[in-house]
Length: 495
View 1: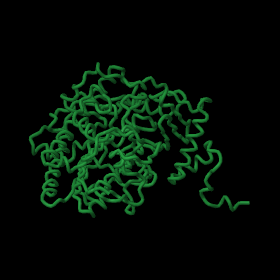
View 2: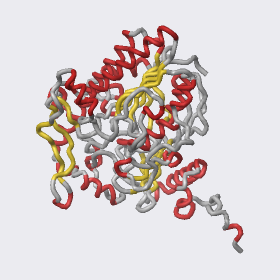
View 3: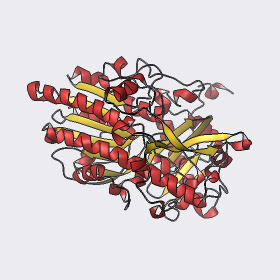
View 4: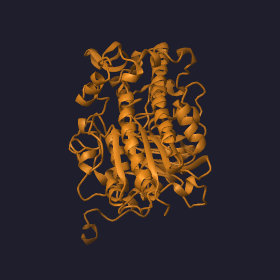
């Protein structure tokens, strides 16, 4: 185990990897995160366990796969799954508090419906909900206290509801506020207040801290000040290659989801502007991240604090003619940014498959603590340190629904991706020849051996995990020999 370290944990929501300079975007200005990546480890194959807020965040919090912790959907759309983490499940604050850590959380929580950070004895306030809390009393009080104008949106951009049923979802709009009055600035101020207190404790008594700031953005709707709304010229914005999507040979739910989000309501120029606004939102958050990283240095904590940056999942933003996230396991929403900067380690790029769940035991190892039991992740610190390690060669993800129940499982290795859709056609993509996942080759004869291999591997991994999805695969997928025994345990007694 390492010597206990301070940890600053930064998280965004619905954040595309390709919006960051350190991940190859030549236009978007993200100097704070780019500098962090240049001094740390940038993970190139970092994935969410499920592309939806609450289940992903609960997996980070517990170290468990979504099917195991049971928070399968967002509370706002819950159709019968758990609303809160069960009392007998491991949660990250417990060992950290027992080890004497100052523990603070600022910003989006969205793990439980009622239980916030205070319930787990963390410093911080429960800001409920999925979107920026523009009308929360704490934010509105902060605005008045600092003489900032109230929240107000002009020039809102709406989609069109399907079936000609009226106005669709709000996608973007201009805030009648300066950058210093935004929710992002408010969250940063709250984080800096806790950081100042924790820095004093660390200097005076050596008491370590784990401090998290979770931004609600760049999740849509993109409601940002003019300065950022117009920061990027839409002419500089390339449209996603996967806007050429036809949905041919794919689950029909994807086409219906495109209708739900009215992605085709916007023409090419409108999409370029919306993407440019999304980029502006990313830069606005990066500017706030820069303030926090600057404060670490000002408090003399830079050499004593590990910094982790990630997101809960990605966003479509027009890719595959889709928006938001949903019942499609494309890279756009499953591959996420992952940056881990640990003082004393050399910077580098990590190519191994890692997930949000791995950050749970990583944080504990940074605190000099073992992983909790049970734990479905592995600490990434050996990868950060560049140590030789026997690591996984694939990643498996799950999805249980968002606006409606919908079950999916995915296996992705270095070249191929298999998506198992129990109610529909399955998907297989050759990411080497088809990086934008436009051509489903599941039924192509040339890929029969690949399809069979990935299907068997997915089945065996689900069986190993105890994910009940394996029971459907055992009868309804081409897995050959080696099926698991009947789930009710009586099949062998029947003569």
